[in-house]
Image: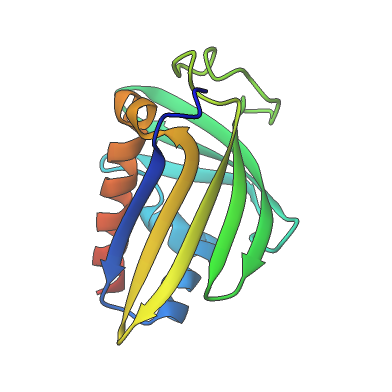
Amino acid sequence: MNSNKKELLISHLFDAPRDIVFGAWTDPEQLKQWYAPDGCTIEFKTIDTTQGGNFHSCIHDPVHGECWVKGIYLEVIPNQKLVFTMVMSDQAGNSVSSVVAGKTEDWPETQITTVTFESIGNQTKVSIHQTVSEEEAKKTGAYQSWIKMLIKLNLLLN
């Protein structure tokens, strides 16, 4: 990827305390309720949200089909930060190239997602940084999916 391209960065302010918001990112039952765009569902074959843990999930989209992803939680600092990898995969958990999975040639084979949680009074600011260009994320719909998922999470927390 061209390092001059702006990487994806999205922030959202939630009307909930930081520990509640963090919990929604690390509790598999809560993730199932919001971690997929509108009209889609998510299935976790495996999920361990502890540092060094991994996940293997599929977003089921009635229009675009299945999107399998796997990753490893590289850093978990309760109520402060999550860092995890994301790699396109198949149903069996084998890595597949981003292009085979339907992404553009500029989509990274492995992306790092960093989510930070900051208290602002009784609210929580969540910032998501991904090592993919914002332009590519908008082309593939990943950017729009994040926005939709954050709106769903906001509704879940209120």
